[in-house]
Length: 171
Image (cartoon, rainbow, N blue to C red; front, side):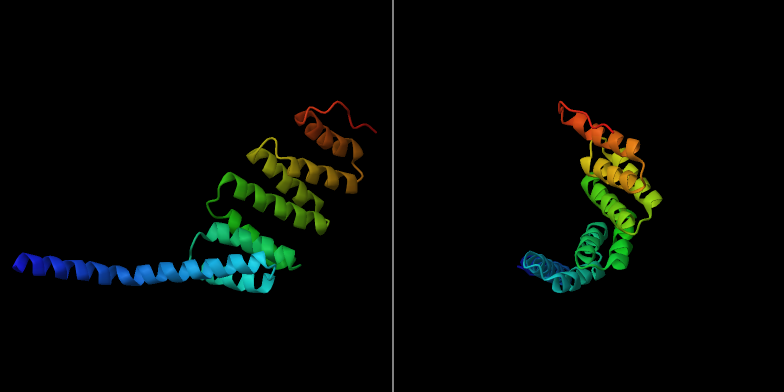
């Protein structure tokens, strides 16, 4: 009988010690769900507010900074987008997340006409994934705006060759 009582007490103690973590996990799931719903409704303000709460909980900060960067960019707030995308790239991200962050920062730099920084970002993408078409298109746009037409065509031809298309971009 005493063994059962001790065993029951031990189980209760373990459950009670895990309760705060379970409650925090449940709260995080609710916040994430709210953020995703707001994003689906294109309510950028609510989505950003919810993802900022997730970030406070330090849950997957790289991924959350990346999402926040994308949302701020969609909302037209380039400085905040750049801040969060830069912070995302300082975290551990998978290949697709790295590509997304680098290419979005490249697009921001392109929009600001900071062409050298844009080129660097798009080239970083190509180092990560050789056949990442977004990066080649970004480079082509930058080179076109810089009136470096042969370089722009070279980047477009890389895409053409990767798709095995039968034509060549020429001047």
